[in-house]
Length: 500
Ligand SMILES: *Cc1c(COP(=O)(O)O)cnc(C)c1O
Ligand SMILES: [Zn+2]
Picture: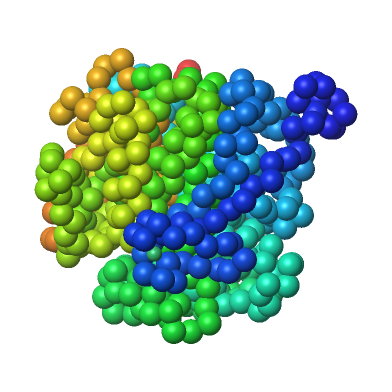
């Protein structure tokens, strides 16, 4: 829709107008820093950073109803810069001019309600929000669109020139970083992966985007230490979620949920897997910002899910007394939710900070953690996918988390859950194969539910001498005999009767 055709009261707001004053704020010492420099940690104390808009109060001057209308009208725009996460420009990055925004098709992912069978089985009404339908097939694109738009802005402003973007990854961060870097001509990317701990599909992504790909022994936490060291000692840009620009972009997930439910989040619960804890940080922060600005007047419940094989955040919150909680990293074990297989999450200080604010703003305990088994993750993923979804193993973890949260009373029967399927099922197809072939290595502790196993059936019709092959098609009588024999075998296998 052309801007002139929008209603008059919206026209003046339709193109982002707010002049944000973004600053980095250290969660440890409280100091603030301007965004002219690319920072990952506090230059003074090494603490973790978040980005705040010092002019945020100006956003509160606009009534919530008007904001809702602005976002709803922006959905009709064809301006590429405003089609993705920057539909919510004023809340995501109100210092980035539209012409510097990098848009590769991220955001605006579908929300799909589960069918009756699956809702009944899970014990709650629920939807999947399919973040696997982002360009590199995971939610990481949201944060990368933000981080790379900012990098592009710094480059266009002449603050930096050639840039080497690096990240450690359980697979999806590297796929997203390499994709966005490949779009910008003066940015190169390098990714550091734990050897044999990313799926072949994920490995193919940064390779395909032309990144330098390094594999090292160990697990993600080891890779993270290496890139932290590299970004301290060398002139490289860190693209992990330690980079607070990633968090800003990932807040869009919350804004989209708010908009999808017409800004009424009464009795809603958002469930997501936790790895490095950047995503849950962003989701809490996003809802809080919308709440403070009056765009929503209810905060949804948040449920973070971890596998028993990588559960440091869950363990931390096991202690009910906040004063006595103590964070202890864990040594991870093999997990099918491999993208979340992290023992020492970088964003833990952010989670503690924001969960506290979130509970206060909600006026009750609104942030919860649950733990699920590897078996439950796989069973629920496969079950979801047999009922119309494209959930990845981490999406299965969200669904297993819903079931666990229902069982222990965190979620009641009147509530509706929105589950983050953080990546596309195809990235993790190898785990589905292991399930179907019952050959999970022992450390996973998974044996398939035989009713869910599926495998192809090879048809080789008996008594047929001539079979077709590539470049050697059958003809005439031979073809007819072949078709009839194959059709008969398939009909027998399917137990269908003839129509005459
Ligand atoms: C990165 C990732 C996670 C974990 O998200 P964090 O922000 O690290 O907590 C979960 N699922 C998938 C598919 C991911 O790629
Ligand atoms: Zn500091």
